[in-house]
Image (cartoon, rainbow, N blue to C red; front, top):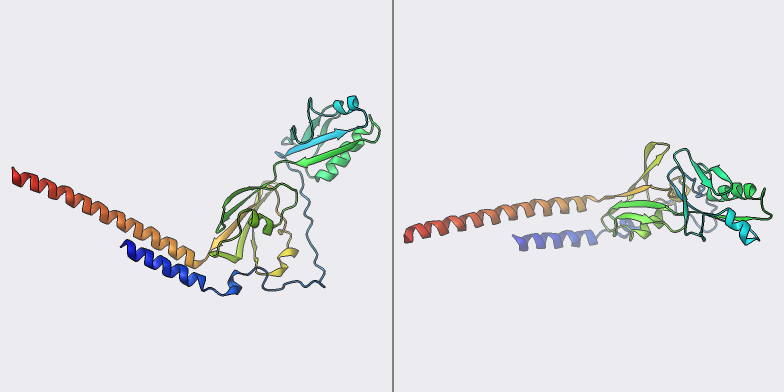
Amino acid sequence: MKKLIYLLSFICLFLTSCKTKDNLTYFRTNTPTAEQVVTQANWQLKIEPGDELSIYVHTDMEEVTALFNLPDSKEDTKTYLVDKSGNISLPKIGSVHAAGLTTTQLAEEITRKVAEFAEAPTVRVKLMNFKVSVLGEVAKPGVVEVKSERCTVLEALGLAGDMTIFGKRENVTLIREEDGVVSYHRLNLADGDLIKSPYYYMQQNDVLYVEPTETRMQQSEYSTNNSYKIQVVSAIISGASVIASLVIALAIK
């Protein structure tokens, strides 16, 4: 039985490996040329309640700089949590509304407030919790940490080890929550027009799901069913062995 399973699995893999090149290719339709101008969606992230921000204020005077930062803080070492109202509380300045702004816009807003107390300040704001989930037919499914604030669908897949040969490139689902509303968006990675999509760039906590091909589902179903059958047969053989042992023992007596 085991040999039969291995043989059939090998046949399935062999047939899968015979898929045409087109079935495994990204952007095989509507591929833009070098001469074409492609309009890309805005990739800048908007700060949301629950986000974690690194904020560092610098001025020409060290003692003044210390007034606007958390105690003993250096860049990226201490962070601020955006509360459910979308605000953060900064030393010396107090409450600042952050939700709905980009990190650049928030840095400009904080700079204006600090400029009331110090000359020519500079402010650095960085989002520290940019994570997305990539699930389904990829090499390394799970939660992916993004180091920058710009991440495309392709980059997210790359961080997850890319799709396996069993992933449907024509049917990738992006799940996104905005203002408490969850939405589902189908992406066709075989279509070059994907880069024009408003969902080409990832946002915090997005989920990408790569649907398996029919071959993968059939292979999984076959393996599961036959694994169960092997377990049943093994249990029957074990039970028969026990009964046979009892019969022999009784016969000897």
